[in-house]
Image 1: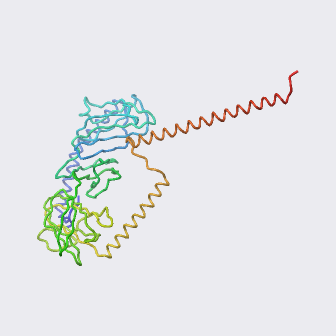
Image 2: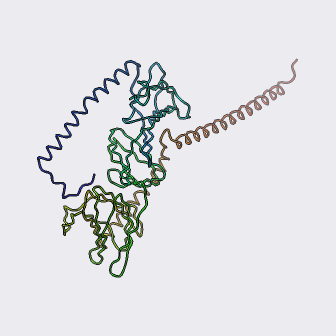
Image 3: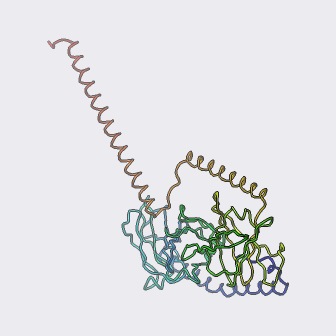
Length: 397
């Protein structure tokens, strides 16, 4: 989580307190982990089972508290005499299903009387060359507060997070990620704070200055006030914030405030902008007229956005052009390598498999027709040769 630099200086006593708290958490959490390991070992021995290690995990999230979890197992085949076992993600869970990639139900069970109180799913069968897809609901997973959905993802697994179509912007550890076209992100060794707005609607704010005006579009989970713009040599945008944890996306017109920007967060009594007051920001989605800048504040104070000189802005534009050029080269390389495969267990994967199967069947039909035609021509040729031999040898005496 983003913190202002002026608050980063900690005393040795505070450092010791933090270390002690972390150490206490480790001690408290050790006992349940040992119990879970013992429970798993007992289950594996009882069922003569194996723990699934190679799997793809997918979280499907949206603007609701529940999420769908999918475990996709691509490799291997087994029967009920040697079942496989997967661990259910912690939290209240319900509605389990296990199917193959064709949607046919597969036999499964769990270690307790009901799925809701179980910690493991027992997979009794998997056919070779068919993906196995385990799906269930994690209830009350996402949390909504002040118009912002949020969840700490701390699992250690690689997780693909798929986002509902209506969500176009998410935040990973406070960094904005445009998912309008990708619709998902890969969280490697997943340790991330995931956030997104409940309503992605910018609010316009009109500012009057020097017989002129400009409009700034805001997206935030809190309020702002006392907005002020100072033009001239040093371009400066100021406004007050009051909420403890406020996330911002601001669309700024480049006509009035050139980028790259420096963003400062100061107390109301502070009248100067120092390096210690500078906070982390991200600029993204820049076009010819506007650029978005995102940042986070952690209390009551004043936000100051300082614009760049024309020389600094030109350098920024050159950097953007270089990035676009590299992206074009990457797209060419991807085309040469081939299309990226969709995530197993999704509709796209099923459609691709269907197309691939249909294409193979068509090719096999064509090949069989070619073989039949070749055999027919060979038979005709052999018959001709036989008749020719009989004619050349004359009548039998």
